[in-house]
Image 1 (tube, rainbow, N blue to C red):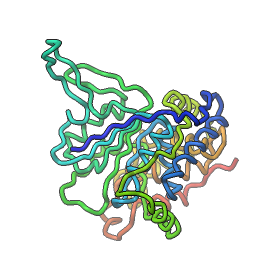
Image 2 (cartoon, rainbow, N blue to C red):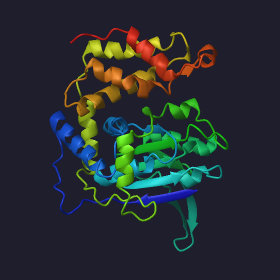
Image 3 (cartoon, helix red, strand yellow):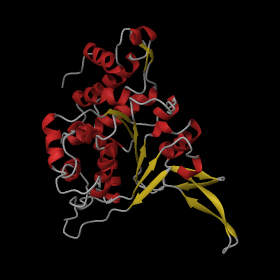
Image 4 (cartoon, rainbow, N blue to C red):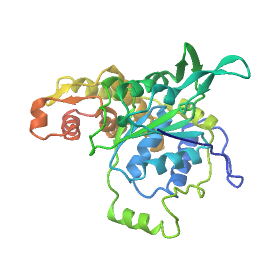
Length: 338
């Protein structure tokens, strides 16, 4: 088990924006956060946008990709620019639930039992290779991801917002892994596929390491342009972005259609519809709008629903993917006209 904890603080030279009160101010701050991340994280625009969508929507992200694509760097860069406390847990088969949440121990000096808080007591937690740990350890995250609290020996402790889990898993190596149960998958707002960089991005990435010693992840050049309090304010503004009834019906129609679509054995539940609206609101903020457009819903449908459906045996035999089936479904459902 590996656990690292770091604190991020405002750079003295960085101008600190005031707490946002409007969608436009929210968009401006998010774009500044995105700009700071790209100082050290090259390319992968889609992945960064999805991480920011999850941050705005107050949800969690499951990143899936081969090792070495920069998942840890992305998490550290986000924490640095938001001036958030961050932690990292390397999930392994011998990791115990108490290693994640914390435990009660007897303090000899004070002659009393006290709570030793685990790495979940943070703002941004990177759960690296989450499928390396057995189900009982994965289950330690269920309460904290859903309710923002941890129960240790009958004592419930609330976490300080914001709280974001970025979990990673390797889609290639399956030896010694434990598939995430449906209850765990459903706690993630988004499931984002982390693909290889383009040729130009990889060239720029290689060039950026010329003066670097070893594999040190350097985020010192990132300025903190937000604070935890600001992130909470951003989330509240995002949650109140206007959604027209026709757009709401469009989103729910997509979710309900997954339950009887050819090739899908199990469709998305009601939480999938709620998640789709939440992430669509965040997408609208990134686009600089104060309302959700049908394109926001369509854009967020696959990362929001891919982990909430299961394929039928026939679809798997044919070699169809969830993305292929969801794209076909989206093409058949007519979007409302503005």
